Amino acid sequence: MKSPLLPLTLGAILSSSHVAARYDDGLQEPLHDAIDPNKYRAACPDYKQYSMRAPPYSKGPFELPFQRPSKYCRTFQSPLVEKVIEYMNANLVDKDLARIFENAFPNTLDTTVRWHVDNTPTHKYGMRGWERGAWTGPQSFIVTGDINAEWLRDSTNQLQQYQPLAKKDKEIFKLILGAINTQAEYVIGSPYCNAFQPPAPSDLSPTFQDQDDVVHPEYEASFVFECKYELDSLAHFLSLSNQFYNHTGSTAFINARWLQALDTLLSVLEAQSQPTFDDKTGAYSKNVYTFQRRTDIGTETLALSGVGNPLAGGTGLVRSAFRPSDDATILGFLIPSNAMMSVELGRTAAILEKAGKKHIAATLASWSDKIKKGVWEHGVVTHKKYGRVFAFEVDGYGSSILMDDANLPSLLALPLLGFVEADSEVYKNTRRMILEKTGNPYFLTGAGFGGIGGPHIGLQHAWPMSVLVQAMTSEDDEEIARCVESVKNVSRNGLIHESIHVDYERDYTRPWFAWANSVFAQTILDLAKRKPHLLFGKGAAAYTLD
Image (tube, rainbow, N blue to C red):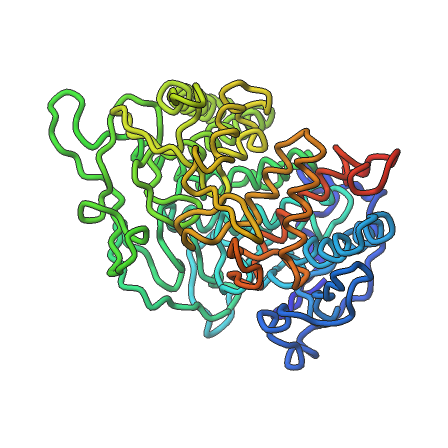
């Protein structure tokens, strides 16, 4: 398998002598002859333009376009992925839905694996230098789509639908292991940052933003694309590893660099759980992380000279300066991100306990419990209409923000995160609140589309991602069918957009957004396993990748 920019080697990193690597050789698909995209790259169209609309068209009434690049232009390939697509094309009753899945499921592999190597890269003359011991083992740089940078959150979600295939496909195994290793380097280098430049060993040029940011701690612009501190970015680093272990049983990622990244993450949790004012003396204590951007958009910078609004002590919660949408928090204890961090810390602790690393496992378990208690104590409030609900943000002083945002993690997604069961009374109250205009100011509806949006795009654009999460958190067949149908109806390019104007479906943002495509694929795979009759017809058997 080869990337479009650097040949990949099969290497020995996953040899049978490496006891931590656990893919099943008996299940490995035969590898196709490697295609070297370097020979064809000059003729490959810009996918941002290609993804607008291209033939051949689906056999459904919408005649949706085929949006996969030529095999010579795809950035990564897997025979197992092609088999999943073949099954869906043959069995999905709705052929327009099948076409969107055919485009969306492989979109991350087809278009966003900007660089991957199977073994530790070697330094070559003229390259940027890097720390001794860094970039060890397989590496994978996964961009978000139309932006040439890797978000920790996006890349974890982009790879999620391939995790069940990692035990059966060596190439997927190494791709995801490489993504874990690469994320570890980003966390070590700049743990307060959310989006990153190409790794130095890739020899790819960084893309510099035209932003006037003043950030502390300072960062290297050739390493970091943007440095908004978002708690969920660190939670997603853990999630990528936890998913990999869950599906493969492999602990190949537990190496010196990953453990250093984990120590770095814990130092951030410690620093960001401190109050604005000393509990005993009342003295002001400036947070180590500050962010100021010269902008006329209020959500793009932090209040009070880059510090943000005051937060109380003794809550058990951890501050997040920005939301998963990259918008600034109003009250810094962001409940969905704290919930996710609590869950992922607990899962990582269990893995490390089994791996014999009991001390660090106990530390993570303690943090998990503390944050979980903080969410239930400070993040649950009583609404006069809906009863006890989860707040979106709190400050520990008693103030709260009641809303939800489309981006993950969200309040709507709490059962998918593993924080609560879908039948939890507090969650059911919360779900009802955030899916009504009277309960959530960012529940947006119009003549053509409706769903949860957020301040990132504005007050007239709902996000398909939120409607897909609504489907995955529902047991009601009619609600699920309505959600899937509404997303299909506004996906006339055969791909999932970031947001859709609620009154004009052709007014959308981002024709190429790999994260949203992955969420669509995950939704279809979830329903294929949980509600197969909705996709394949009455009496259909469940379909699963496991």
